[in-house]
Image (cartoon, rainbow, N blue to C red; front, side, top):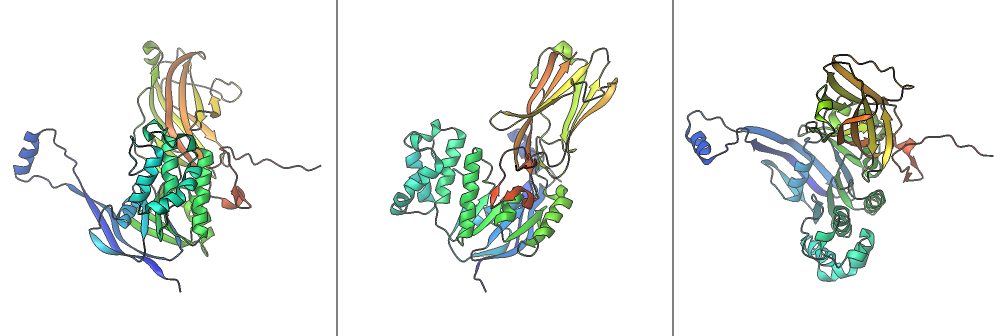
Length: 416
């Protein structure tokens, strides 16, 4: 029987929400001494969380934003404390909640490696032994003696994560650390974590990359509204988890409740007076950041209102990667693709992307409105950030190597 290295018993955590924030000292004092003043609302971030972790086990924690993943990892790492329950560690733990914590912008990359690694508990001798491998992994050797304030955000994060990978701890905890850097570095990061998992490290991963978690984890916990909704042993319940995720996308859907941004670029106010954009949604989700699942159809909806139909208004969609390269574009101007009829009042334009078109990755969506087929009216630049997930591992994996690229491109092979 394996040795227990972490034991979590009946952990609960609540926060007080100050809904009625006062704008002045007078209002604050008045509310304090007012009779019958309402108490702040209590938000239950975690409720009665219990689980144990064995030496060498890899545990995945999933759930939509706000489910309690980050709160749980903050409690496990000692950043905050539970209101109830107890946590027992039987080893040295290192948490990676904020990659780059401890980095100082005025110090060089070299100096920050030593500073950050020291904060994580490494001795100077240990840092010196690992320094070259840290720099090689980061890919920023040419800038290692430059102040990190001159680094791009990608360089900064790559160096910081490279320090983390070099740590020697009994338990490593990662909170959403697989989504920064370019494609090459993300691949290297996943490969390094995979190697750590294979070398008997005890690891907790809170993440939305379900394909990756199903590849490396022994067990996955699904959090929903601060409670453990389900636990899956991947040695025996892999297919059950895949089916469960497919059936319960509303529970694990990654969204951020941000409103649709206001107009970014209006070409001519007069042109804008005749049309109003009411909302932009992806799979009926109006949030600014949305996760879609390539195994299902994706529907982009633009709700708008026309005051009259004297002129025609068309829509163009551009999907770009994080480097601003265009991956896919579409327009209603193409007469072969749409029987385009508009009416005064409310209208909805829908663009349907078939299932299995995208691979895992991230896209940014720009919406452009055009008048009379040639005059720009408005541009909503990067109005949506779309994270794409594939739940079907077997079709997306070959000899342990993920098929890369944003387009799935499942074409036929022919030989001779």
